[in-house]
Amino acid sequence: MAQALAQLRHVIPASQLRHRFRFLSRSLRRAVDCQLLQPHEQATALQIWALLGLRDWPLLAKLAGRGLEALAANTVLRLTDGADTILPAHPEDLSEAIYAFAKLGAPDLVPGACRPPVSGFLLRAMKVLDAADAVVRLSERGLQQLLLGIALSGPSEEVFDLQRRLLQKGLEAWFPLDAASETARLVTNCAALEFWLTSDELSPEPAEFFSDCLKINEAEPKASLRTLELNVLTALERFLKTNPSEEDVPPSISIMHQTPVGDIKLAIPSWNVAIMVGLPPDFFQRPPADSGWGSTGENELDHGALPGDFVHSLGETVELEAPCDERTPMPNSSQHGGPDNCLLDWQRLPALRIRLLKQLGWRVVQIPYFEWRKLLRSEELSFLRQLLRRSTNGWGGT
Image (tube, rainbow, N blue to C red; front, side, top):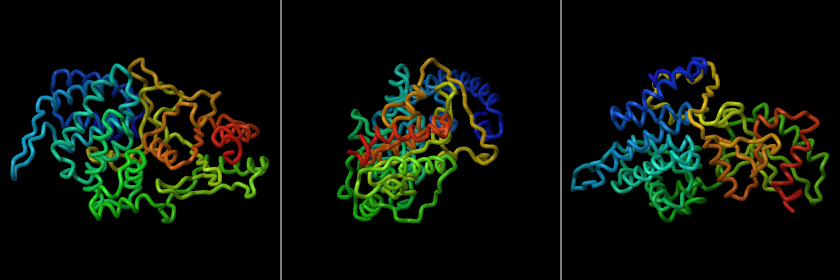
């Protein structure tokens, strides 16, 4: 039932989806309590909830707790010559679960009461993949999910060495398969910038691909500016004209500025400023919906278990109410999207890009659509002045 509804998520009205998934959530909790779900069924449920952006943490914590019990029941992994490793769960299910939880914001965005089972499951799942050396037997899709799941979550002090080993093993196995995609660049730069992985730790062929991904991609940009980004560009051009800099070379705006982690659509290179304009698909949480239930950005990793997906139907936003009292702080209009002072609930992929750009030395100015659209044209320049002064400590970073 959940799979069928997920396939039709852009066709069924959001109010009906909200009602049906509330019912399914209760039914699924009962099934988890009665131990009626197999590991692959739990992984599929996680995938669907992540696809729809359902941060139903009480349910997800139950799934994690049950998965943790299943993994703990068989902690001794038997390795014999010429025989397969006896695993407590299929490696593909574990990589899929790691990716699904990361896409929903785990472990950092999990409410306190639900965090222990989720963090415990993620730790045990990574340990199983590492101890059994199961990474090399993952499919290309499984490798992508594992690597991107670790990158989206970011480094954790408690499991840093474990994450780093899995990244090393995963990149070693993945690079002969896929070395040119945007995902490969993001994962590689995350491994290098946040986990300090180097090409010397890889065998020759993956090391070459690794090094290439750390260079600026000089390919012709495939994306273009969206309408709101064009509006911000026009305002930025007016701002720079009416606020002259004391620098010898006046600052200029670079469109689709190339970096190792992808193109910055709007940048002021002389100030090391990247302007991130966030549109509705870029955020998990969209005002005025209650926190907890929203939607997540989709890519090819989200559709393996959902054949016949109506991805391009009506494009209606699915915003579902929170099932518990936990709240994710949302930006306040008085903050006007300040670069470090407001809590914007970015999708995990743009959040990863922001993290990596900061690691590369860029000052990231975040402009959410719901703040920009509230401005009168006469207010746009003062809004930009406030953001740019915060990010550069005055014009030109002086």
